[in-house]
Image (cartoon, rainbow, N blue to C red; front, side, top):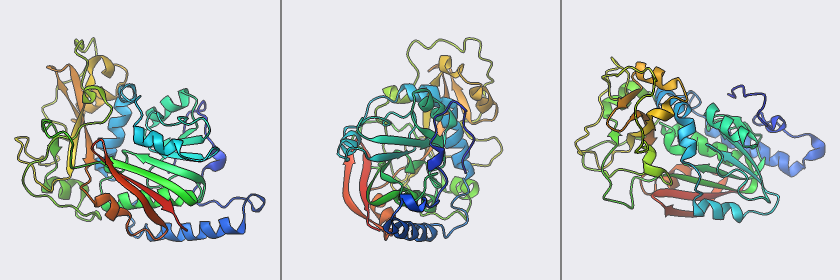
Length: 366
């Protein structure tokens, strides 16, 4: 479902609306055939009625968090990954590139010879993109607002790991493939469980079996494996101090926030978080990853006061920050390839590990 966007936003409404056929004078019979195949493939990816229903964990620990930290998050997002930049630069001049999960739009317009359109679930981030003059719209990764066979390429950078079930991640991949033309390319990157820097402290909170069952629900279609050993902390790439506050952060400067006793979860929700002692399962893949929003940044939005009052964030006076937890499903080696292996209308043309991320490039065949 698309959300309403500010009037000032530049939005390509003529491209919106999934699976809408173009008029006959703009399309060939071949394109109609591609659309039919793409629609069929999409239907195969939506066998569960729960796929498009956003789980509460994503609403509270992904959507609301990024809405609250958007200005600070954007300020840390400026460096471009060389691999992503290289992929975009390799596209033919005049290519239409879709960025699904564009964040603050750092890749939009990177290649002047290509045309870019971005979307993201976070309205505040989309506002930042719009203020920069980009073509953007608020949308969900599992229901992209573009007709089938629309773009020449699509990128999904650090997005899939925020989806909490296997079926939702599969659906997102189906959508990425659906919106590109036959022969179009799809670049996907996700955080890896296997990290380059093994000396990092474990700053993450693992989700326990009880949390997964009671919060996400036993009926959620997913493949999870939780046991016991240790996993090193996973860094946010290209982010100064992992979102931690600047050293000159002073106090709340008048921001009226109440201290909450809960670490980050709702009080009374009966959720058990994993141990912080370092005893983390070798197969653990579900985590809460902290984002430190400096007190002086928290003044930008009243969302922090609400988050603290609801127990969705906590104050860390020692670091001078409001701490939010973001949900992540980190990918193990080979998991991303297995996720796309059931796709009958795309093939893997490249796969690699870069900056503690698993990456894959698909090409649409039908």
